Length: 445
Image (tube, rainbow, N blue to C red; front, side, top):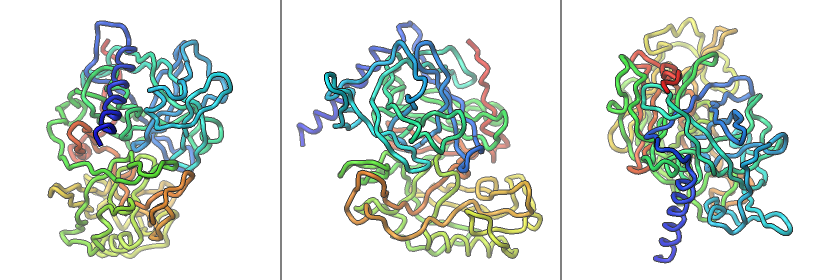
């Protein structure tokens, strides 16, 4: 085991050396970075989109945010022009960070990776490259001066894997538990804490949420107070089996899992098969957080139990459901409250006794053209796939997670992922009479 540990440590040390040594040559070293994130509903699946500036000369690149993705990929098939873009050599230390043994080219072997569209499930192959990335710094109050990472690592995608992303979006930004995810490369480049916070706005027009990397106060809540001091925390859990579209046998999941012990509606615990709330040796079960799933997903028996308890607590008749939802009501019979639609909270009781309250604004989906409102969770099915019985194929099947907390549930909640302490912080800032669009993106530089 000792040689394996040494290899892992050397790879981590190399990434820190490689990216830090190529960070912008400036006396200014930011403590935190900031990116905008907007909600796009132009495609069939609502997605959350961020922007980085990449290449020489710099070009704005729109990327779908994948909280559990392992890396950044960008479509290089058309019009990728940059004087600073370089291929990563096969067998190099940079290549090994992607866990890749794929090579292409005749005379010069180039490192290959497998860009995956986690919205559509489509994967392909592409070269691993490095190029300049520019992003704004922040002091937690507003955006500041831009800084650059001259050799940011990413995988080249293509039109095939880009299909299904919103118009103008040419790749995906992975925030997962790898050394080449967006947060990991930023923290290595500027030597700040391995943590980031994401706050998704529910608005779609001129309404920016925010992503903050590193150490900074989160001064965009009620009365402009530092929300980092008001977070609730729960431990992060590692799923030992990959949930990625393409993976190797024995590879753990990049995604973020937490421990849900029970679900409570109207002060009554929902009867569940509690074995589904834990992750078994095949990677099945548990609770994860996702930005590529726009709504919550529940295993069939959990969905039925939650739906039954929720309908009873609401106390009005259901109506014909609107796809993809299964539990819907007449909107005018539900009414409203300061916390959104007037429905009971769905309480997730977590492993350390902390409770995640899912208020009406995060549990219900309203429609502008019909008088219907639906529970924002969908039935995820119950049949295990091939990978759940010990086989991890290279092209598709994934273990089933019992509970997925989706984009709707995350909106106007401040979520902090602290990898150094292996914990997740959360707080509804909607409950604090604020929202995620309150961050000041006007540069103070």
